Image 1 (tube, rainbow, N blue to C red):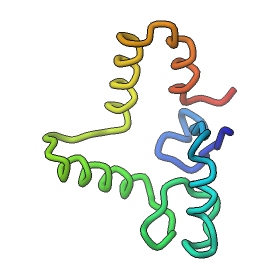
Image 2 (cartoon, rainbow, N blue to C red; image 1 turned 135 degrees about the vertical axis):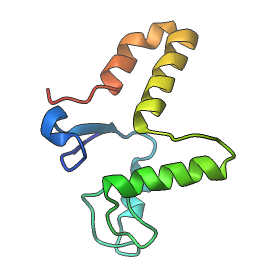
Image 3 (cartoon, helix red, strand yellow; image 1 turned 90 degrees about the horizontal axis):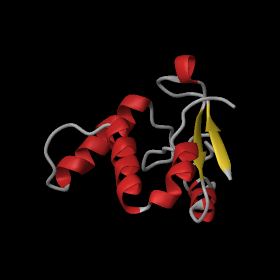
Amino acid sequence: MVISIKDHKTADTQGPARVYVSEMRSQVEDSTSEEYGSNKSSVFLSWNGSKLESGQISTATNAAWRKGGMEGHVTSTIFRKSAVTKVHTRHKGMKSDLADLVINYVI
């Protein structure tokens, strides 16, 4: 399953972001039930089910990063580049699959 995110920070220059969902599909569906709120179009939700804006996601990610004892500022680019590096060094046969997963453009 692929979710297209149209409302994000670089949508005007990069187009919608694509999120690939597999095992987490049922968890995503459960988290958007009436119990947690009705905003079914958002991927990142607050504890009460309301949509998180880009800056809030970055703030929450950095808070978790610091709480885990890590130093410095973390961004989605750091996560993406780290994942690419790890796959390139440990799973050479997956390079072409990885390229498809980390793109940020409209086909």
